[in-house]
Image (cartoon, rainbow, N blue to C red; front, side, top):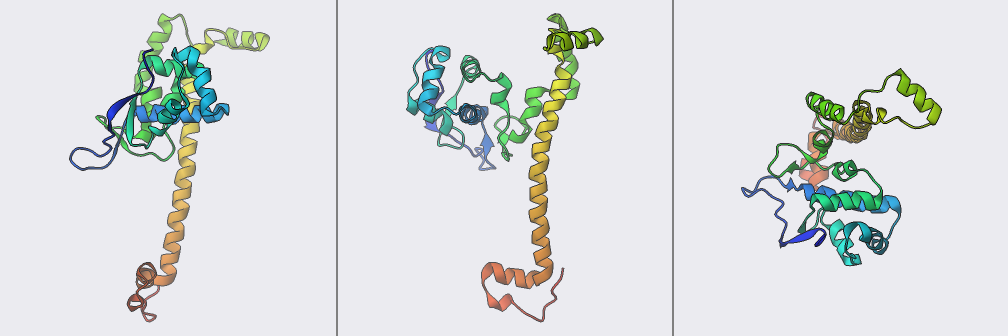
Length: 228
């Protein structure tokens, strides 16, 4: 490869041209998951550069690895091609899907697409109505849904049969449930915070709350109603 994570030469333009809400770039997500992969393996940036050399084809510098990781939320864009992402997957010994999972809590919309970052798993794993097309491709490869014979063989050999490797629907469902559980935990935390806010508001009243926020005693009227 001629190079990895090429800089665009200009500062990243996060906001929309019309001054709207910030938008995301898929390259940022790859950069975020690159850092997560390095942390998962427990490698330093220098070790990462050395271990990726045979997959990338060039010796990265520590500064180059740092620049890749800084691309998520950083000042400059980085662009990855498909071969480079494949090299990352091989170097970190992780599936390609790893590099397309959404960072927690990132709800920006993708540039040029209606989807939000936290919904990226739908684009990566496919919607329910898109699965028949995948089934057809798996059948072209000679892979079908596992049957009872496959289950018996797995018990005998302790590993899935080639046919079972195509059991994409089950694996997809498991992964979706895990991702939704993570989002549910975040939603629960938000609900708890919101509940505490309204409990406090009921206790001090609107005028009392404004007085707290502004530190203006003119709003703190003890005779005002202390409930919503």
